[in-house]
Amino acid sequence: MFTSQQLREQLSSIHRKSYPAYKSLKGAYDFKNFILSIDHVQGDPFASPSHLTIQVPAKIAGFPDFCFSSKSVQIAVQDYLLRKFSQQLSIYNFKAKGSGKSGLISTTNCGQEILERTACEINQNFLILRFTVGFPANGRTINSLELEKILFDFLPSCVQKALFYKNLSGKEIESVVFLAEDQEFIRKELKKRQLVAFVANGSILPRESGISQKPLKNAIPFHSPDSLSVEMNLPHKGVIKGMGISRGITLIAGGGYHGKSTLLTALETGVYNHIAKDGREFVITDASAIKLRAEDGRFIKDVDISLFINDLPNKKDTHCFSTLDASGSTSQAAGIIEGMESGSTLFLLDEDTSATNFMVRDAFMQEVICREKEPITPFLERAPQLFSKAGISTILVAGSSGSFFHIADTIIQLDCYQVLDITKKVKQLCSNYPLPPSSIPAFCTPSFQRVMSCNKKPSYKDRKLKCQGKETFSIGKDTIDLRYIEQIIDYEQTAGLGELLRYAQEHLIDGKRTISEIVNLLQKDLENHGFKRICSNSYISCGMAVPRIQEIFSCFNRYRRP
Ligand code: ADP
Ligand code: MG
Image (cartoon, rainbow, N blue to C red; front, side, top):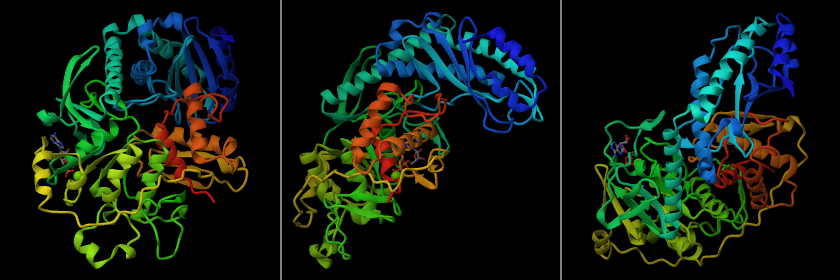
C-alpha cells in the first residue's frame, strides 16, 4: 500500500500529461482514517468514469454491535450509509471542472426498497463504499490539480460526515435498525401464522405516478376489514394491526379503478423491505412470491407444461415444451411451472395481464368446444390443486369473471380503495351460479430435470455484457428481455443478473447440470461471497444489487439457448 503523500506526488508528476498517464494511479493509498483504492481508471474523459473504493476500518467507523444483529439489519444499515454517502457526494458532483465526465462523482441512487448492493458493504474489518469519479482533464490533457481537490478535500469530507458513526445521528440509525428488525419479525410471523401477506392499517399503497415510486399524497390509507384483521406485537413498534392474508386462494374483486391492482402491486413489492415513510414499510409478503403474467413472444425451453396444456394440434410434446415465440397461454403455463421450480409458495396474478383462455372457460364455451378439443386446463381448475398438492397459494385480481368466486377461500372487495371481506356473502350466492361440470386431468407434479444447454464454449466477445437499464441486458449477441419480470425493481438487479448469467456461461453451464442446480450454486455463491467470485473484473464495482432466486430463474429461463 502507498501513502497518501505518494499519491499527491504522483498526481503532480502527471499533471498536464496525456490522459492515459492517469492509469499510473491504480492502487491503494493509506489516508490514515481510511484506505482509498483506485480500482479502475477510465481510458479518456468521455468514457465511463473510474471506479474507486473507500475502506474505513471498523474500529474507526465505530458502528456498534446492534448494527450487525442479523443479515437484514446489516443490509438496512448498508442501505442507510449508502444513502448518506451518496448525499454527500452529490454536493461535490461536477464541482471539479474539465471536459467530458471530468468532476463527476457518484454512487448508487437508492430507491424505495432496501436492497443488498455492491456499493456498500460492511464486514468484520471494514466499512466499504464503492463509487465512480470522472478524472478531470482539459481536452485530453490531465488536470490533476482538480483530481487532487476531489481526492484530498471532497472525499475526506464525505467520509467524515457519512461514514463515521459519531458524526451521524444515533437516533436515525437506531430507527433504521428497529424498522429492519420489525420487518423481519413480521416475515417470521407470517410463516408461524400460516399467512402469505400482511398489510398494516394506515399503509399508503398507491404511488405518486408511473415514474415516481414515492407515496401518493392525500391517498386513502389502507384499513383492514375486522374479519381479516390480525394483530402483531412488534419488538420495537409494539402492537400493530392490519390485514392478514391466509394461505390458500384469495380473490381481490371490485369495480374498475377501485384500487385492485394497486393492492396487488403493493403485495408484489412486499417481498422487499421498504424504507421508513414509504407507506409500504409494513406491507410484507411471502418472500418467495412471484407475479405471473402472460408474455406473448417469450422464449421457453424444455418446460413440462402438461399440467395445463396437452394434446396440441401440432402434436408437440408438452412434457418438454420449447418455443421461440410463446402464445399468451403457453407463456403463462410455463411461468407457473418455472415458478414452482424456483420454490415459490405464492403466485400473484392480475386478470388484466393474464391470458383469458388460460385463466377460465365459461359454461357456454365448454358446451360448444368439447373438452377433447381444448388443450388447455384453465388455471381456474388447477389453482385449488396447486394449493392442496403443492402448497402454493394464489392471490388473484379478478374484475370480470365470477367463476373464481367458486375456488376462492377468501374474497375481498375493493370499494373506493376500502377493503371489504365479502367471502360469506358471495359463498352464499355461489350455488345460484354453479360451475359447469368438468373432469380435470389428474395432477402430476411436473418434472424439473431440465439440463441447461449451451452450444460452444463462449469466447470473450460472446460474453461481453451490456446492461441497458432495468428491462434488458445483452451478453454477446443475445439480448435477455426482462420487461415482464415485474418484481425486478432496480436496474442494479438487472446488472447483477447479467453478471450471474455470464459467470454461469463460463463456469457452470456444461450441458449436464440442470437449471436449478446452476441457480442454486449461484445463489450459494452470492450468499457466501457476494459478487466477489461472480464478478468478472479483478475488483468489485458499485452498480449491482443481489437479485432474489426467483428472478435468477426468470432471467435464466428467458436466455435464448439452443
Ligand atoms: P383497478 O385495478 O381496480 O382498476 P387501480 O389499482 O389501477 O384500480 O387504481 C386506480 C387509481 O386509483 C390509480 O391511479 C391509483 O393510483 C389510485 N388509487 C389506488 N389506491 C388508492 C388509494 N388508497 N387512495 C387514493 N388513490 C388510490
Ligand atoms: Mg387493475
